[in-house]
Length: 192
Length: 249
Image (cartoon, rainbow over all chains, first blue to last red; front, side):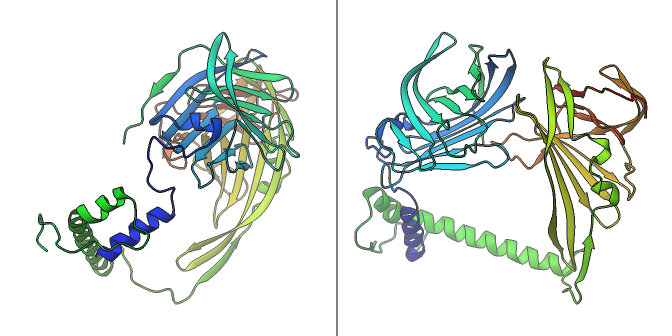
């Protein structure tokens, strides 16, 4: 029986980053600011573009301190979906962006470090200190930038995700900016 | 080993030794885990025995093997191959209840085969996917046309809402929820409008592919010759065709 348990335990150790000490750093660089909380919530909030169209977005956040972050958001009118996953590896962690849309392209930034990373296909991610949207200042912003991608597989050029708030801005088609309004989000904590 | 008593056995680790937490897991809790594992094995045996008994004695269950596999091929019907299926134009303008207009253009028209195995029946189904998208706001309507042995089906997907219906081999909608003799959309009067009741997919943090009957039933209004006239989602949003010429069919 012990052999079975040891095998399971061994398999567990081999397929994860192992035991986590909350005081240790498993995701390197500024990307670490996204894995500083235990959270599982979903919320609905409002975004408005510069053409005056208001849309409702629903997001879901699951994260585990100090090594995992999973954020997913989609619009109601706009068929826009974004998912960001940060997870630990032996070399500072990976950040994966799923673009959504028809192809749901997957872009992986490996071995996180510093405050910005560039993908071989030209995509970039950067952690900004802060960004002001509609008079409100958000801190620790992940900027996903597809403007220099060889073939942008995403429906948008840039997406901005605040570590503690979620999606706050999307830029697309050179001239359209969709921003989070100050209207309070309706939030709920999923129950099992 | 009796339950409730700690094992006297030594805990042998592979080299290098696992972290302390794993020691706690492996050594101090071994006997609890053993008890859980035994319970699990007992439950698994009961389940397996029940399954076997059901297979042997229950009505409608079968232990027959398939002596002969039937192969069938279900192709799209002619009406499903029409370029403008149900008269849905390559590009059509719609108004949204939020106050904007969009041009829905056909961006995908692909036909593909799908293999389906169902016990003694192996069938190859032909499907056709029509996708209509707008530039901004980014919207998408997908129409999936499928073939079955006797009937054909149509799925219209829009904003996590699905509208499905069956048709006969000529395209006549079978058992529609409602047929309106006439209906007016954006000032244009249409004859024979089929009202299709739909449903909304659950949100993705649950199970996206599991249908959920929501309080607000979404509707699709479809004309056999003018295509999709209106979609009303479970959120109450509407997308309505802006017709231009020949209002009457």
